[in-house]
Image 1: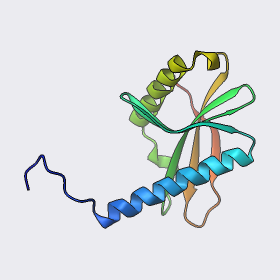
Image 2 (image 1 turned 45 degrees about the vertical axis):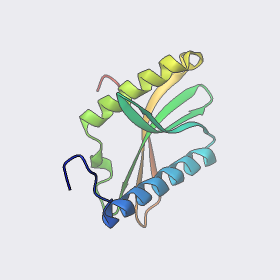
Image 3 (image 1 turned 180 degrees about the vertical axis):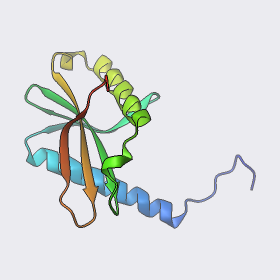
Length: 128
C-alpha cells in the first residue's frame, strides 16, 4: 500500500467516531431541553469546526462537545482548538449577518460515561 492509498478505518477509530456522534446528539438534545434552538451541527469550514451552534433568546452559543470514556473531558480543549472554534464562529457570523447583534458565547458540554452531561456556559472568551 502506498502513502496515497488509505487503509480501512480501524475498529477502534470507528467506535470512537460513533461515541463522538452519540455525544454530539446527546449535547444537542440537552440544549433543546434547556430551551435552545439548534441552528447547526458539525459546522465545518477551512479554518475550523463547531460541534453545535444554538440560540436561546438573544444569546448565540457556539458549543464544543467533549466526550471521554473516563475523566479528563474538561482538560481536553486546548488553546489551539479554542482559536479554531473562534475563527469558525467568525466565519459563521459573516455567513449569517442577521445574527450579528446577538450576544455570542462559547460553551462546552462535557460528556463522560456514567455521568450527567455538564453544560459549562461561557467556558471561554475569544480574548482568552
